[in-house]
Image (cartoon, rainbow, N blue to C red; front, side, top):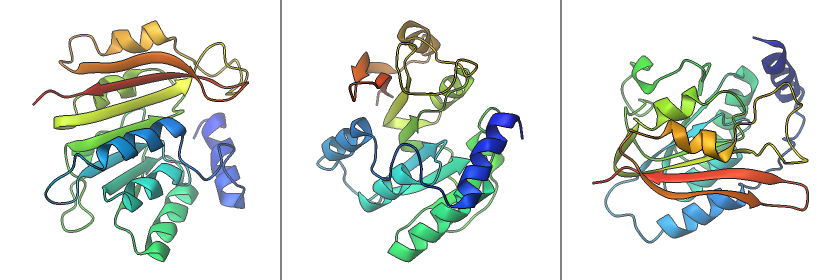
Length: 205
């Protein structure tokens, strides 16, 4: 682990609450509300990238998705696994470094198997370079949706200056040539001090 990862693992291991709270980001909540009337058939699959202690994983599972959470922190994964079991919800939590991880790396089978493609992918505040976004754009089923949210460069809230904060333009540019339909790409002020880059894209049928 690097110093930033160690800081988060220590935080999660101590049982401290997430700095972003327990409720899902309002943009994630809005997508779940819209998608509720669109689903048909069996449980859709979802992927929560940089899941932390699972605020979005739990919201996805409660909304009828079969979620896979991925975070580098073993303590965070244990917290998610315990919370899902306590609530009787489906899903699984994996420990992996998202700077290099792909679903193809998971070779398990059965109820905990990780699908190669997903109906919904969410990534909230994965503040690193945009290589994960580039890879995640290839993990959607036809009609699947990708929601990517980061702290904007001008946000008062967010990581220290040493942590990357890609601009809206840089984020959009990553999806060029990926064949996705861009639904939204904008900066959204979620509080008086929080400014987020929000990107939403869909894999055409």
